[in-house]
Length: 144
Image (cartoon, rainbow, N blue to C red; front, side):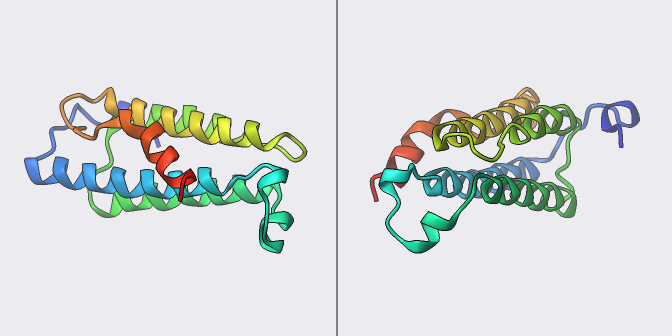
């Protein structure tokens, strides 16, 4: 569905902008958790960690994406800026393949997150979420 062709620029109400910011924050927390769970071989301790595959992380990332998308639709927060951001983000997620180093998996998760959040942030009229604290949040998750 081509949202940009079918809709004129939309202005969310203050409460909708606040809700969108909350939803983006919740989604970012999910992505931080996913990023932190992608451990290098030397850091793996539990059998569950040792059995994970790169494609498990890709599947989870795409599942998270679909949940985020549906949540935006459910709350009537879907914006035309999401369509282009989604295309770029999905292309980053598709770069996660079997056999690549876990550092590369983390890199593509980070690129995915940047594509979706900064793509949405281009809609300066509606998006008030602070996209620049990712590194601090990731370090906090990794240090737990």
